[in-house]
Length: 144
Image (cartoon, rainbow, N blue to C red; front, side, top):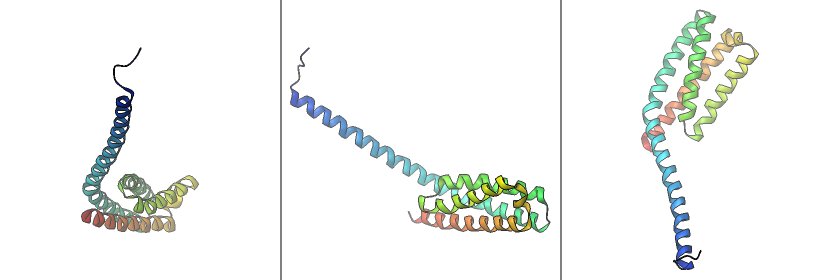
């Protein structure tokens, strides 16, 4: 069946369809970045506050040598760090990923290592480091 439209018009339609597809993709990426920017603006300060609270609780539990409380605080802080990793910009993700990797390795070896005095304090210093990373990311988001 022969087309009513000339070939050159069909070629223009095909080209415009491809351009439309590319533009749709670009707009989709821009909207996604704007949405993530708003999430960062609202969620990162909350996550930082939660981590500060868990760092304080962990410090108290470590000082009291309460192994069960240390395990609970480590699990809670790990969940918060995973959320933070999802929201952080690419530059800041690597530090939080490294912290989560160290926690995962310690859990696989023996969860008691995290509750031990050195392992727990190491994790506490990792949480403090992640709080500093979050503070810098929050400052960067404010300027963006």
